[in-house]
Image (cartoon, rainbow, N blue to C red):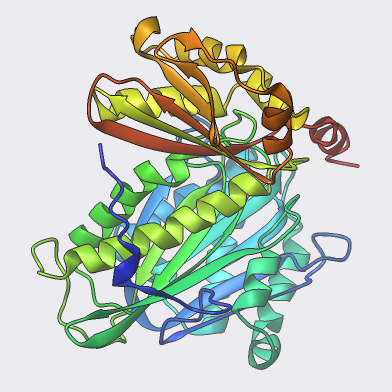
Length: 410
């Protein structure tokens, strides 16, 4: 399993960065009529066919858009992608598959692309057919919107119950050339760390060999998107796509390139920031929760414990209620499936140690309560058994999560 590779000295953050920050990409989004008022149709296009990689949901019921996009990815290149929000086109049978193919066909035709270099993605309510008349009409309006829309509009068009857009970009130097990596994501509910219950689109102007690109995406997915959870639900639709169009004019990158680590670190940072934004924007969430596990014998073990704690409903509700009930953390560690010795376990809530080598400390409850009022909560778990570590991200669980999901279709 992959270990985090982020070295922040290797890259710089782009102000207001998004999917169009790298050279050679255009993107946009507008309201096509799938949702009441908000933008609901977005697209990205590269000036040239880009090497492409993808990682997809593990849900058994994979939606038609995923099947179509996987087919397109077999050639190793994408030049454009179309996204609709408000309707997942999932569990829609043969008609749903026909509609996904028609979306690909119409978008490719309008944008001057080949169908096999075009991706299709959908997100929203499961089990309803796409309003194809509105979608096709919207696709044919893209040329008139293109001059006045942007990557920020794309990020807005892909959201559903999200309360904010999620975008980030960085630059780095490889072979003396400036490389840019940008990304946008959506996700607020149905978020569980099993690739991926969300959509993420990452673009770069780097020239990267196909196998290396897929390897990089798979690697960083394991330490970013697969380490977040909001509600333990795994969606039918979601994916991460990575496009590399080579417009930075660097020497083609492979895993043996001397500056491969610079690219990998920059890519992981972009994906980690998008993942954290998704966790922070969990439906009804008021706090971002980061669980750091250290001192494990194996990285897999550290990951299992971090995921178990960050996904615990009892831990999440305690954090929402600013209750330093560390016993719930111990409970989640205990059912993680990993063997942990009680007398070697230490737990801290931020700077406040609550368990030290299996013994409860005389911590100040009011200080702990004050700490848990912060918007960013860090839980540190030290197993004192090895050198491996992992971090998982999630959020608290509030009354609003029930309210939002009880009325999702109304």
